[in-house]
Amino acid sequence: MICLYDTLAREKRAFVPADPRRITMYVCGPTVYGRAHIGNARPAVVFDTLARLVRHEFGEDSLVYARNVTDVDDKIIASAEAEGVDPSVITERYERHYLEDMRALGVRDPDIAPHATQEIGPMIAMIERLIGLGNAYEAEGHVLFSVSSDPDYGVLSRRDREAMVAGARVEVAPYKRDPADFVLWKPSADGVIGWDSPWGRGRPGWHIECSAMIAAHLGETIDIHGGGLDLIFPHHENEIAQSRCAHGGAPLARYWVHNGFVDMGAEKMSKSLGNIVTPAELLAQGHRGETLRLALLSAHYRQPLPWTENLVAQAKATLDGLYRKVGDSEEREVDAGVLDALRDDLNTPLALSRLSRLEGSALKASAQLLGLLQDSAADWFQGEADAGDIEARIAERTEAKKSRDFATADRIRDELKAEGIVLEDGPSGTTWRRE
Ligand SMILES: [Zn+2]
Image (cartoon, rainbow, N blue to C red; front, side, top):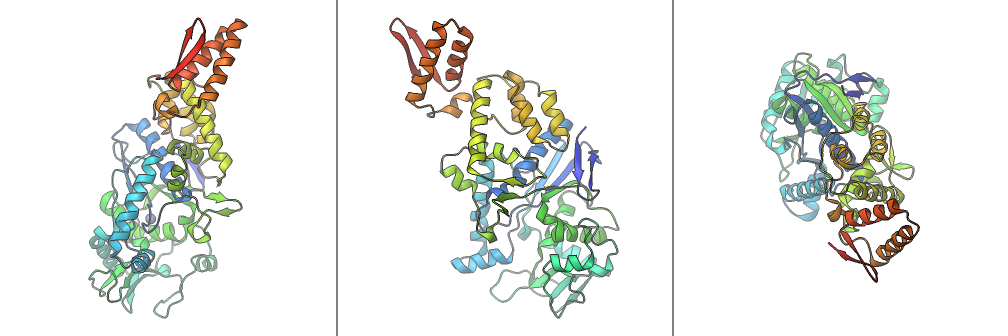
């Protein structure tokens, strides 16, 4: 039984899907106008790990995982204008980079990746429905959601009205009936990307995109809705309001799961603060994708994760140790201790500490559930061990043999073999070669 902390209920709850043969999960994906940073990679890795666990528990084909691509947005339009290109040039480039970076971290592609620009029809239909129900209104080419029309508005973030208005940094615009009302549709100026609609040529607001695409691809009520903590308000609050009002009160999601931030020093890593590190940079420096993945899983997903060079170095050392132990073992049963830790609200730090005590096929299978130890040991260490290091360990082995400590001698030989180094004992001592 998996337990998940549900942000809406403010407690850990047993995860019971509505239909265990078709479990639905939606995670808010990237706005594609720049290279993803490590903070952006955290939800991708966390929800990839959750997806692996759900598939392990309920069956490989039990889950439909959707992660959207926001490919129409003011920042995209600004980038396209700055480069003097069509917005699609920007969005295609950065979507490609996003997928490359996430795959390098062992993140499998989601089952469905809906693009906002391909789903304008369902968005317009949902907006029309909200207007018809009295939950939205048109004003000066805009359509706004009327927050006061929804008595349950605020259930997720539990903010009072003043905090909501302040937190949303709402634009006080003359066409709004209430400063807390938010945009479902806005007009596009000539030369700016837009679509024809009953309210004139324009483009959708961000929040309606997710509500419309969830309904179109997964259904009115899904099992798990995920994303970063910063999306709780206003984005997810607004998604809930739109969807519930449009669907006769049906809840949008049965479990709300949010990951914490990646911090740089005392601050959250964010593009606007300019303190970002990207997977692309780290990979170019020679770090492996699995090292970054393990670093991202080293803290519990709801806790903040301070990003440091030392964290990356420790993750690398941990993986070196695991690869030495796993050798060329075949994957078999996942260890019960690792599984229990993951079932308990995806407790990856505990799962990793239990992993470190395993060997052989249980280690291989358990690590794979976390998306780790995907390489062979020989590939992992390929070209890494330098000659000086190898000679030092051969000397250590020779000493061990002299003092008849054959267990240590054998361990060193096996460790080197796992790194693709073969030892040959001869009359004049031990020589080595790469496999
Ligand atoms: Zn969303």
